Image (tube, rainbow, N blue to C red; front, side):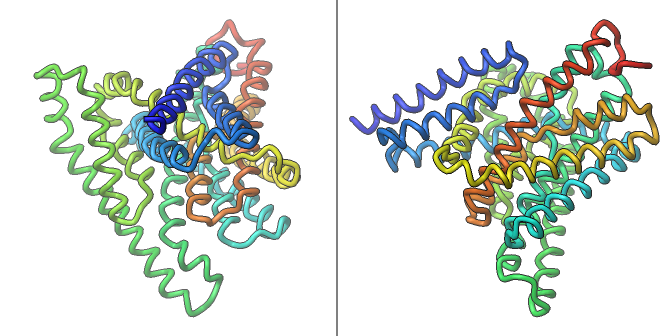
Length: 406
């Protein structure tokens, strides 16, 4: 009875505080996950002094965190419109490819060559830094009614490609991890290539299965749900589908997060996906905070000092790589002001960055200090970029254009 009471008190307190922090940060114009991370850090501090989190309680939080990852990636996948993305692929791919290569390359050089980290953590950090959190910037662009502009649509497309590539790279990294941990060796070349090819085949199989589902099953299923009017149960059905797909992808050797993302993509092309997203909000706010609280709990403020130097170096790599890598190709198709504004908007890191680093930490592929350094980069970019965008867009707040000049 006492153990159940502790679980209920811990989970209930986190939920209430998460909702309150989200409401407060929304008024200030900052992402809600900053509040979730702060809750995790505060919980770690309480546990440091008074031991409020027992080992069984930690298992409960870890279990809820796994659900949170699936729901989070489902929502991200749901918000990706693959068909619309493919129609605008050429321009967006050039910008996305450039910033991915630049950011990943600089991130790897910073960790492997300058910081002297080993191959595996360097790869995890490099991949994590290639992703983008567009949700941070779209709130500011939306306030200025600029998302419907050509630059706003291009920014969304580039961010979707960044996130898609991050998910694929995570799948490849986890599959190749046993070989990468043994170091670079000619004897491991063929096993590594074989595993790499097998992973690509599995991803192709998932893609074909998804196309078949979308073509033949998704619309009839949604019509059935609308016919019988199961609206109160829609979110539970969506959760069941997300969990089932996550389980199937896990059986194929991929992280469950990949399955959640893939499940979201299955429904992203349906015109009623907005209804699905709205019905999914309750589950999102129920489970997702536990993932970010778990990330915050991993941060040890009493050991923060040694990570500040690496964090600054990674921040420089993240900003220069994403900024310059986006600005240069964008400048070829738009004005300097628009290209610069879009490049700045792509700087924040957030959900998928943390998912990749958390996965690396769970697999013991990255150290606690490397994990902390990347989380600090996430926090700085999520706080700094909205403030910078508000300043840059302030003169154009009354227009429909996203820039200071036309």
